[in-house]
Length: 78
Image (cartoon, rainbow, N blue to C red; front, side, top):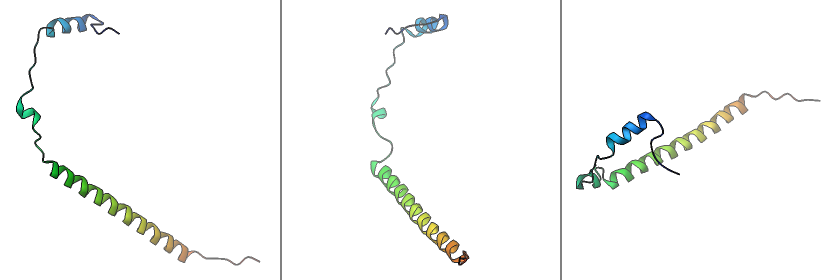
């Protein structure tokens, strides 16, 4: 599979940028600006919030089921 210009505009772009050289590998680019412990703390907080939300959702569902069950009127059939 060949890589190259497929139409006139692509051909012009290839010709324009064929001789360009890019050197963006500086030492500052390789250093993380965010502490790994901060990232792990944020992930832990997010997981705890999600776990609490699931727990509260389950409790709310059980309360709603209980309210519906108590308000139901059961009719004795013969």
